[in-house]
Length: 168
Ligand SMILES: CC(C)(COP(=O)(O)OP(=O)(O)OC[C@H]1O[C@@H](n2cnc3c(N)ncnc32)[C@H](O)[C@@H]1OP(=O)(O)O)[C@@H](O)C(=O)NCCC(=O)NCCS
Image 1 (spheres, rainbow, N blue to C red):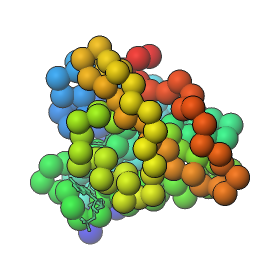
Image 2: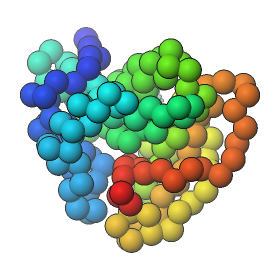
Image 3: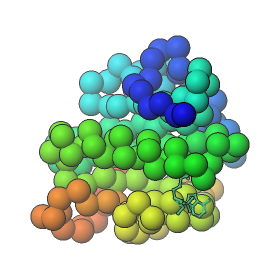
Image 4: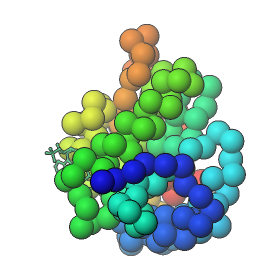
């Protein structure tokens, strides 16, 4: 049984290590424990973890703006994939975004990450532009977005960070 809950300060290190190993591999470590803790303190950011018993097996971080939200990080431990945990994290965040009146969720992923690309497409995201050199100048990002309201018109993706904020 996997439970999804808001992250606590004590989760910061394991979340940061998951980011380094599962998301940022080969790019340097931008989401350090201190940065994860800082995101948790930000009132416009939700950081959540999926726990199997006491073990955090997945996590996600999303920042909420006026009308759009930006998914900064989402990952599931390699030995726990294809059990619906990633989708459950996504749905938790989408439910909170809807309550907040958010019209769309934006995200970036490494262009070569075909598994995540299929995952987000399956969840209703559509693909946008490819941004060359987005990740530390060495890898392109694929922008994706998910409309939560019918009045959301596709336009150029605004700024954004990615698998995360490697340009910030
Ligand atoms: C992408 C990721 C979060 C998916 O997590 P997950 O818990 O395995 O995903 P789910 O089990 O909820 O998958 C839901 C559906 O998405 C699709 N999907 C998920 N992973 C997939 C993959 N590797 N290849 C193809 N389709 C995939 C499938 O349709 C799946 O349903 P199914 O298993 O019934 O076929 C996980 O592979 C991961 O952490 N990858 C490394 C980090 C990463 O790339 N994060 C995203 C960019 S920030």
